[in-house]
Image (cartoon, rainbow, N blue to C red; front, side, top):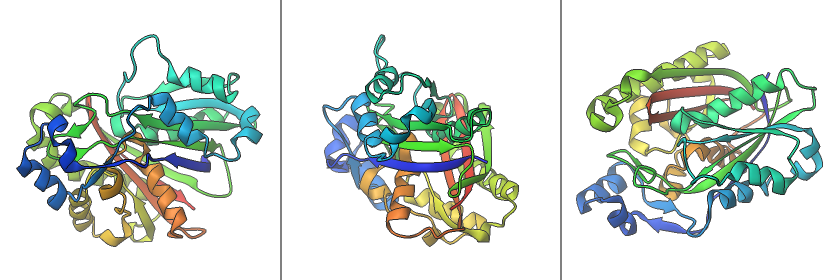
Length: 308
């Protein structure tokens, strides 16, 4: 059973008010007000001058136990929203592994689930570790730059911030055990995500709800048994609407980071996990759900249920 051994995140200290980004995001004053008042997006994390490698290293450096266990790391996975994030021949993942003394590990990128790829990487890591020694580990990292217009804003929906996360994964462990994983992939949104945002918005709630219900059912629990939901930080109103549809209390969805960080690509789940741990929102034995949605070549809606 896949388990999280340790989680660390990095968020740059610089927070940029949405109004200051209106020019580069091509937002009208009305759109800025919509994002702020309706979606509750306020500030955006930005790390000017930091490359993807810098973001990843900043997160991994906060895994205090990594130097002592790096000889046990068999796999290193970089979960990415975008298939291409640096020009050839740069390879931040290879450089990171060399700098951290992880040359012996098999390192590769996981993508094509867009912003839900972080959950896919956890699942892949657990499957790979199933055939490894019991003490073997995988390192899953996430972190990207808002380097193009498409990587800065989701029309009418969200704004991307910069940051990174790092997570050590075991095949089995005493806490944060993965009980179920469900994915709802919508290949029919291959073009509509960018050309017909209206249809995508209409079906977004139902598609994510289907993934959440499937994960909860596979975990053998009821939605009321979920102590906390760690969302992707796309916006607040999307989660308010979804909670009304599934009959789940919105105050048990950790939305506090949305106005502080914006949507940090694949790292949202881990950022929210760190916040939940710091605030004592998870008790031993609690079942919690992590949910994410990604849009790119098609759309992916994913959910995982863990036992803390």
